[in-house]
Image 1: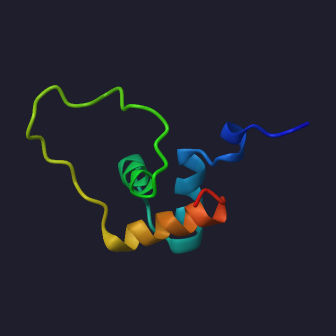
Image 2: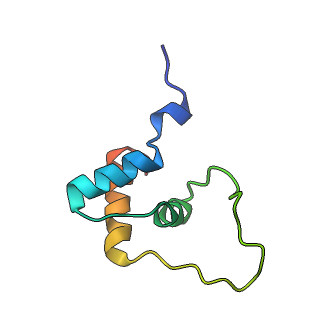
Length: 78
């Protein structure tokens, strides 16, 4: 049976678990989404956007960005 493209991708929880196990860093879904968007992996529009403008969104730190990129490479997403 063939695998669909959606089934071959890792879930956010799998990326978080892999990052914690291999780098010891806890990463948030926000940081994962930022790194995926940076690499052109955009799945769908965010449904829980802020209703007001000017809200601060924390940027992903470099060490966590590297950990997420390693996980994405491990799961062959980039």
